[in-house]
Image 1 (tube, rainbow, N blue to C red):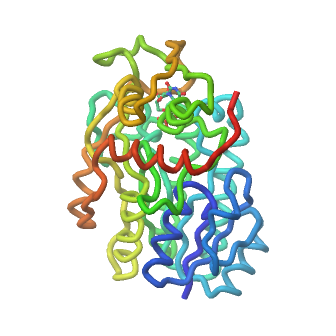
Image 2: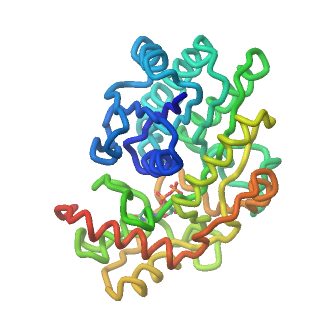
Image 3: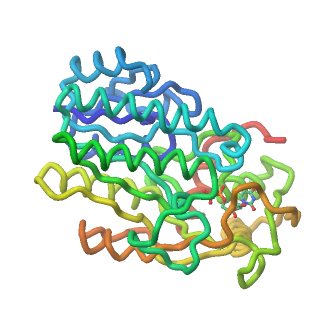
Length: 329
Ligand code: UDP
């Protein structure tokens, strides 16, 4: 039997594919390559180039590869972009997810893992959040993901579908063995951008807002290593396969770092100075979002192996150096 990984040519999905392959599982990747790369899919893993909203293609892929579980990563993920293009986000992240879930139910697939996000919490009244904290997204991105969570919960009540919803906090770093990493040159995520600046691939960087109600005025986030996150997915898959209950879990370490902390860490680890411009806030950014990560440790026995900002940055820098990309404006 085979695990279908949507978005498996993308950043997080490709790490999950590696972990599945490493433990001998059959995998098929479905990716439209809008932000992913065919080269990110390991040799021997079939890549179906297409859209998860293409129901006929999804049905055909499920049947041909005898898919029995789905890990659904494919999504658009940039908060300010979602503010500018809400309908694009609802189409891609919500409508197409509905179509994928429908295909899964029709094919009798039981186990479904969904990439959700800390953005469903919006601006929480208190930090750290837990899974009991009421969702209150402040961006179309967060809303587009929360609606898909609800679809899964409602569908699981009405059908045999079982789900693991994993709410990712700020994912960063790269495969410690150097096989995968964040490859999109135009990626907007903080650690990627700072690493590009450190390597002279962009002309410095901007800090989006230094007037937030946080200790140093910049936003606080809970940064988690992509390999620890991939590991959480494997544990969630095992849990579902063993007949465990549906899961809603925050994936986080429980420690908040400010944007300025991250910038300083990238400078220290890289040994490079670069220009840091203090600019205005970016649309849709909550001031602070950190989770305890207690439930995932308790429920799945998840034990992070890379819970260290310097290590995350070291791996991100190593991957960025290997990419040898052209300069980004
Ligand atoms: N950020 C920044 N400069 C950048 C990219 C990001 O100051 O070039 C900030 C962003 O405003 C947010 C934090 O870094 O406060 C994390 O942003 P990112 O896009 O990495 O993840 P998000 O939290 O939006 O999912």
